[in-house]
Structures are given as C-alpha cells and as structure tokens.
Length: 141
Image 1 (cartoon, rainbow, N blue to C red):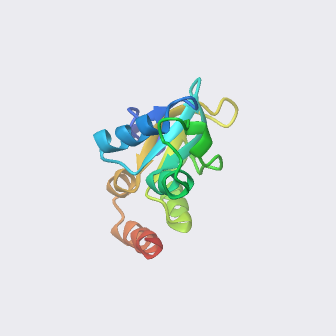
Image 2: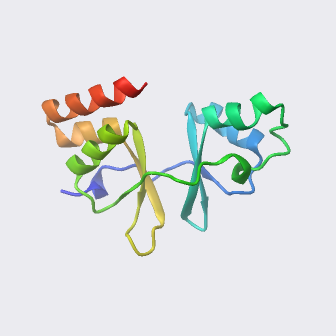
C-alpha cells in the first residue's frame, strides 16, 4: 500500500511573495496553524503561526509589509506519494509532527498534497502502531 489513496490533494499553500498578513488570514479561514510556501508546485518552505509571532509580531514588524519568504522555514520534512504509510507514520512520530507535505517523486519533488496523522492512523488500522506514534507526538506538544 502507498500514500496515493490516503493523502489530501487540496493543500493550502502560498507563493513566496504573499504578504504575511494574507498568510495569517488564510490560517484563520482554514483553521490551521501552518501554511506551505511553494512556487511552481515546488515546496520551498512552511510558515507556522509560531513563526509569525516570533519573526514578525515579537519584533514589532508590520505583517502587511513582510512576505511569506521573509518568515518561512526552508527546511521542511516531507514524504513521497509512493511511500509506505506505516513508515510515514513512524517518521511523523520520530519527528513529532502531525502533518507532512506529499511530493510526487524524488526527481521532480512537486507538491501534490498533504497527509495527516489522522489520515495515516485510519488507513494503517493498527491501533498499537498509531497509539505509540500519537504518544510520541503528544510528548512534543
């Protein structure tokens, strides 16, 4: 089994030139704490609500004058559409993350979706594996 039938294709992302105030509005609209940054379907980073607070608000910067590229974290964990779901679930647990961007393959690395812990937990249907993984993720919170 691969991630192909598990991940969500409708992923929210912005371009590097998007104003930070617009990124925050998207987070509010979609009730999420992070937005991916991509250009031409290539993942270039991620912006979290925490990053906006630390890199903008706490430094008294104006979010309407800052761009997504000014606030993003460039090093983003990801997985591939043909990865094994249980391995991705283990990877999420080890890195204490609840979501991973999904890329098409190792050569193109085009953003095709996002997969959540809940998606994987339901698909793997292994309570012991998903319970252990969730415990790891909860400890990080």
